[in-house]
Amino acid sequence: MLSSRPSRALAGGAVAILCLSACTGNSSNDASTVSPAATSSSVASSGSTQPSGSGTAQPAGLDPTYVDGRLSSVPGLPSAALDVVNAPLYKNGQWAIAVRDIDTGEQLVALNADTFFEPGSVVKTYSTGAAWLEFGPDATVVTPVKRTGEVVNGALTGDLVLVGKGDVTMGGRTKPDGTVDFTNLDHNDANGIPGATLTPEDPLTGLNDLAAQVKAAGISSVSGDVIVDDRLWDDHALAGNPVTPIIINQNVIDFTTTPTTPGQLATTEMRPKVAPWEVSGQVQTVAAGEPAKIKVESPAEGQVVLSGTIGADYGPAVNVYAFRDPATYARTAFIEALGRAGVTVTADPIATNPAAALPATTAVDGLHTVAELTSLPLSEEATYINKISYNNGGETMLCRLAVASGSTDCTDGPGRAGEIWRAAGLDTTTATIVDGSGLIGNVITPNNQVDLQTIMAKRGDAADWKATLPILGVDGSLTTVEANGPAAGKVVGKTGTLVGGDPFNDNRYRISVKALGGDMETQGGRNLAFAVFSSNSFAPDVTGVFAANDDVGTIVAAIQQSY
Image (cartoon, rainbow, N blue to C red; front, top):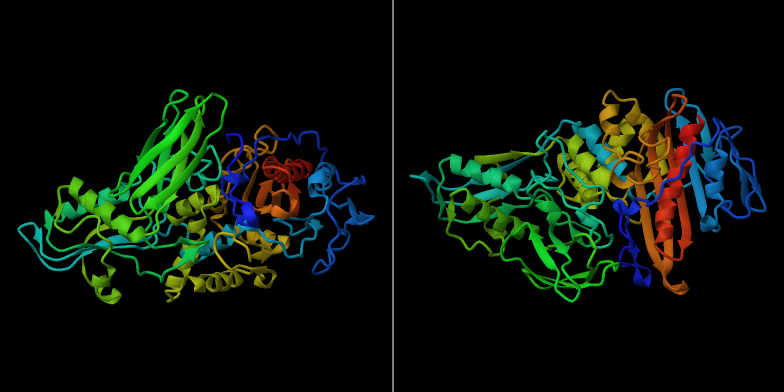
């Protein structure tokens, strides 16, 4: 359950990508009163405006009806769903809804279904889906540790080289049964959205495993250096955050702040503990009933300061700091893991990663391997990315696609993904994908998302693909949406949200995009693919953002119950 309201990092019209668990709503709407096959017929006083142009023609008999420029009816759309579309929150915005029977191909709803809309994190179905098609759900990547020089009586006279291969979790999210662990409100979003929690696994598990293998390979000391080779792809960033082939704890440091008594400092714990990083907890405990208002700053490399306040009855609050040099962080963490395994390293453990000392990449490939870490299967990586909407993970999938095609430029990833989807039968001219996570600049039509989900639903591994997506009312970014309704557990879909501020109007919330694309098993046993998009609605406070997520859930629940 999310706590009260998130901090508002939206000043000056900056756009925040709240497509992780920020997409989760706080209430559920019971759609059980919707009669089967009920369709919209009433005129509402407000609602979606008629678009000036809507792409290709609607299928015969599915044209919506407008009265005074407002939606009056949408063939195939339940009345409960039309009530949402015509709600005051969406008075000056637009809706687009596409629903199709996967088995028969019959189009059931087509509201602006061929009009371009920004999809937000629905884009992750394109990046993880392309990787799924290219590599297969069972594919893994192997992160090796190489050595230069020789080992004599346990002493390595050369270097150890940890070669990043784009493993999204590096063993730090693996449950005992071999599946990926996640929380419904993930730590990646902790600074902007209250209520994030941490999984119990040690984020350094993969490095500890590699270090133990180095020791088992007969190496007890390293007189050379330890170097991280992160050259699998060129330097790349997503919204200012580095996207690298070496990923430790999603390249963030976790901080858990626990209140004490009013007037006293709260306690602060850091995870993982890697030198030289230290935290100074300056958060004051205040009266019960107050939220957590915590600011995270790094005045210097290796130092993080947490300041602000936290209510005495507030649960532990999670915050994160995204370090800027993942290779150096991983190098230090690996040297410390080697020490725990009984391998001594003479090199300075907190020095900057000496990448300039690396041999050519082809030469590194030919070096002797002393340890290997196999990633989780791609199906589990996709589950983590899609369930909690991990932005850098979606982008990593495109980087890996680029590398597999022979490029070291991640910006070649979208083009490769387009080739893969075209080969699978998707009309890519009705989508533009510029990144793997869902930032501004991506546009798709609702029917294109329906086409994608239909392609995936007809594969032999369709059930595995569906398992990567959030489940309505059950987990991920749909945990609390329709949780008590009859459609809970019957709908899977990827959420997408783009939210910004409106400084022209007292910095109200601008919900640029609220989207959901996936498939469902209906009350009547039909298998439907769907896409629901809302754009350009405004809310005076963050409750409107959560309401928009709940409203999309109400629409898909009404559809699920009506067919």
